[in-house]
Length: 165
Image (cartoon, rainbow, N blue to C red; front, top):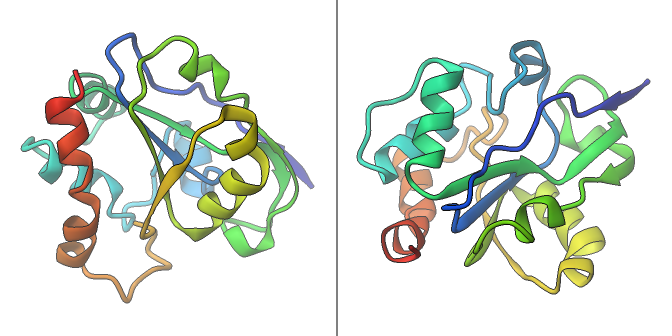
């Protein structure tokens, strides 16, 4: 069954960093917002990078991103997928990143995990003329990475959100 990405990107004119995932998980689709699985470490890592409390509500999550110059979206607009498994993604149609790139001064694109990175390189790197930095997935499927290890890799974003504006 083909699924379509049902919620909007998060960004504003102050966004200097773009973080891309692959496609929303089942839990994210249920909540209509990014990184909705309770075991996904994305919000814990991002809160620590931004020196903020871990956001709980969608509004708190949006505020965390927007108040720190972070835009958030996914590489894929629609695809065939089994559950939440990135490895099952087929027939991907990608989002048009110009929606963000033409309206923000994005200094760097980061991707959350290997599948998002491969899809970005395959479909969007040439079209955007941009490269992306691959970060380890915050997904619970990437259980071999501790929260501390993830934070140590993801903290590269600090330079862009602190000095990017």
